[in-house]
Length: 260
Image 1: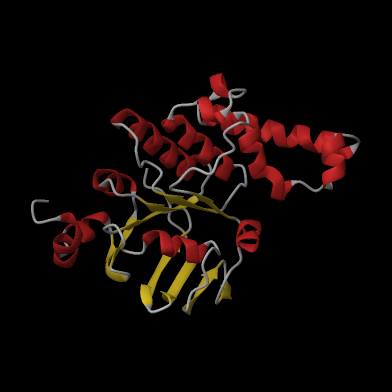
Image 2: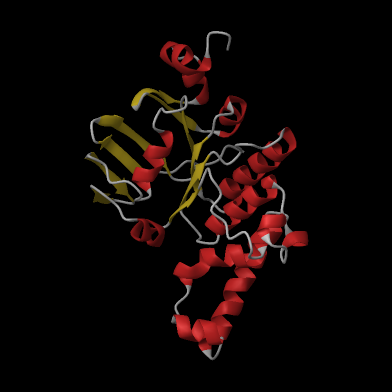
């Protein structure tokens, strides 16, 4: 059964980003529709991570606007973005290596907690009941990602592929409407990539989460994406379905290589 792609939920218009005299992004526009998997591809240095950093408030664009669920911003801040329902994983893992899998994923629930920090620390009154509800939700994510056997294990002791899964779990704990994934399969072996692909598709299908994905593995991108935007030297050179992008001459010469 073909999945239903919704209306535009995220609209990036004419985004430019400069660092001093260096142009990282130049006049980039694209949109993301609800419930789709939208890939951003391009060679190293093309501006892909910079684009995600503009969307989730790490960088402030020099020009352009970002519209999310009908609200337009010329810049976002990271806390505001998370509160509105955009979560992010990072290329370089930023997990708490000495904390357990469970506690790492629990940190993703912080914005959902209503009790003040003192009550949370003492675990008294409503705070205890609230924490139990959040723990139940996190246990559901742990089951979903098939990491039950490691729930009490310090993250630093896990293989790299499982650490990436924990990073995904922490982002899911925010219950995002849009999930930004920055090279979720970088450094993985074939089996780990297959697992991560399956989880990304399941998150999109079962949770209904819209996904924006940066990935270098073209096989993965073409298999799981609904639409692909292609960047090169900070400019957009392609945008369309995987088949349209695969057959775009400019994309072939800039990124895919003529052998593809």
